[in-house]
Length: 107
Length: 127
Image (spheres, helix red, strand yellow):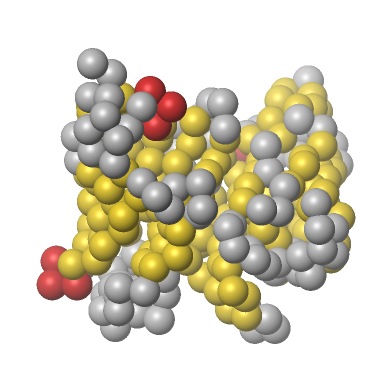
């Protein structure tokens, strides 16, 4: 199975900061990567699919980039509602796998 | 508006079978071109994909669960279900059902991402 390693595992940031989260795949997955946001007690919410396509209704401050083995999720200007845990997921091959998560906390 | 809702027993005894149902509204499983999936979340292992099903009963399973998990569909009730046999405390988790998407405007994938999720259902395995 393809392993996804997210870094950092947690970070502290302030409202207005630019935040970047990295997801590295153990082997090439083309553009087969998505990003999710999860808040406590809720289901994950899809933000990005196909590595860089913004899901309908998701604010444009979220963006994704990368292909192959290295991917990034960027929040251009962190908002109060963005404090959450973020997960990457690869879907290029089965079994589908998720990264370990990155928690974005308030500084 | 698509909605998914998990239901089932919240407490299962060790060695018994965990059974969950996902009721779908706002889309028809039998007329949809989507796969429907189960994912679980534990503090120790994070998010784990269990498997997917298509209305024709075509299934995909994570090899980590294939020997114990069974996913089935009841199109007449617009539901799909998960059974995990011979559970242990390690199967204590929040279980989510979700609808899988596998094609963007540019690419189609063997796997897929999950655009719509149920709220999740906590199952505890304990005597």
